[in-house]
Length: 127
Image (cartoon, rainbow, N blue to C red; front, side, top):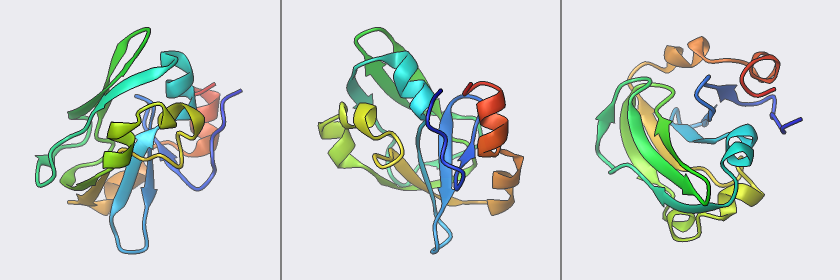
């Protein structure tokens, strides 16, 4: 069973989202996603300043097995990317919840309400 922290929200496309104290949202891929991908060898992160819509393809994670598109779970402006993960993508395999991919300044923070809880994610795509 994949690790699914209770303090996060989840997209059916296997991204997690965490609302930060400053109102921004940190996004990464789930334990289930990194497990399915296998050894991650490359991550293409989005450009900062880019405005995205919910479910828009924004990044790519490549592993020894496959390449997978990463989608924005909510809409807003990309305000930061994790260059450390881009430089050492294998970190996503060891700690997918500690090694985030990008941060968004949400255009509507209520979009988070449409994402799955840990329990819902674990019962569905993350099971």
